[in-house]
Amino acid sequence: MTGFFKDSLTVSPDIIQKRATGVVIFKFTADTKGGITKLVVYYADDAVLIPPVIEAIKKSNHKWVIPDHEKFHDFILQFAVNFNPPESPVKGLQKAVYDFNRHRKPIVTSNQVPLNEATLLPTVMVNYDITE
Picture 1 (cartoon, rainbow, N blue to C red):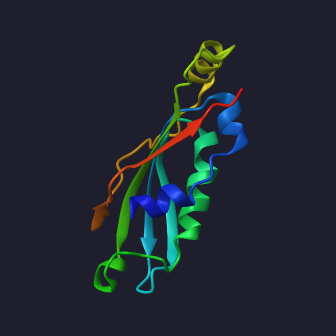
Picture 2: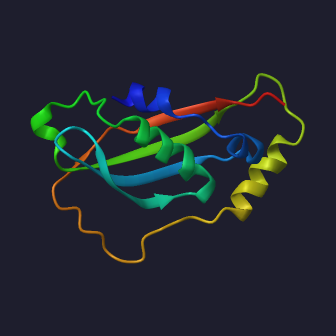
């Protein structure tokens, strides 16, 4: 399943340009046919990381490797986004990483979050290449 989500996620040019890294954690609800009915972001290191994750989840509608009797409840899924360190130094990389971390605006919950019956899925590791 993590392979499906990893293959479905397209790292946006904005993420690459900002050298963004971080984690997005969310809960989604699926109906008995595997359709996504609700999506809630619990945490994100920055808002720039969220849109590709949502698009990957939308692509998962009805394409589950989870047995039918397990589909109808909530799932918690986290994506960890990072870049592959280049073989040789890239001009401005340290500054870009510093700037992203200095200006990032984490999205956090401000109160307790009831999870009810939720299944924690394995973390999806997403790495992207820096070409500049």
